[in-house]
Image (cartoon, rainbow, N blue to C red):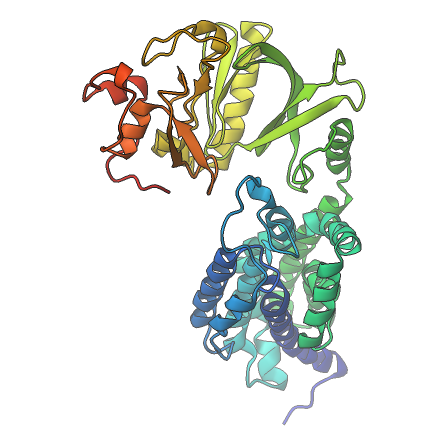
Length: 486
């Protein structure tokens, strides 16, 4: 029996330790998911979806993880919003602990990282398990091949590390402001083997550098010239990934740009500053509003578009903006409207922007559509039913479009939330839930659109008989008969 040299013993130990550390890592990630991520979910729906996702992942790796179905009854104990709150914006319909944007920002990559670790462990298990000494050393070639094949899966770590410093600071701020969250963290810590959340969420940041250390040791202690180049190439690949992550951590300029924008806006949106958001273009455009056309400051990001109103006569030189609205670009459509105008169609609100020139409009149009195309899965292009209408302007409608009554101080104008037409109160008594605008509050609809939902709806007698195709004429995106009151 050949005795192993000290270098060979070190090599065999490091190969086995790779598998041991991977098992410890994915076990810690599962503890993080079970103990903190699920328990801090903003909604029961999100918690249920995450549980289902984890069930599917665990069933794929029965040899690695002793599958234990999570107690679904624990969902009943979560402090989540179970029904929407009337009049509260969607981003504020949250649990007592973390808002939806905060929870997503901090935890969204953890399930992906957990699955990536299981993938690595599953590939390493048959190469390392039940092997000792020279058998372990002989497996190094295949271990290197596994990492070269799976290195692209480290992308989940890249995204997570990029946002880590930002999310850690956010977590500290949230705990300082929210005593309920702070108390809940202490409670959860007792069920996580006394491990603080911060000690678990730093582990993915440390994971890829740990791979670098392992392969640096393999290159140091390996004496097999035949696989020397393979080991060195694998080490270089992992070093390259580590360098990319370090560069991401060092990229503070973009975050500072977002903070500066936030400082200029009175009561800026809570979800304005997120690590993956980048400013593409900003400028002053005119928004066509229901009463008057008004100047707005426009910020185009890689994932959203924000507009804000100016206070007084200011032009955005200091903290002089307010009433900021931000709309996700995913699912939006941006079209040329006229020589200088473009229209934005979003789920919650659609509007028209007037640019200084056709050249200016084309530049905005191209940049907006480039960002939309990058986001893929453009839901609204598949079905315009979810697009909010662009409201007709008041000055262009002196009379109700349905009954033709003249608008006066007493007979006021109203806008149908489904077709955007200007109608009087008598022709807009109907209300219906439009989930793309608000999940619970019923929205005002004109009689024509109301009939599209309720065939028995009694319209304003002054309107007269509504023709069968009249609804489609007024509102070409009227829902079909299958539409529900949701």
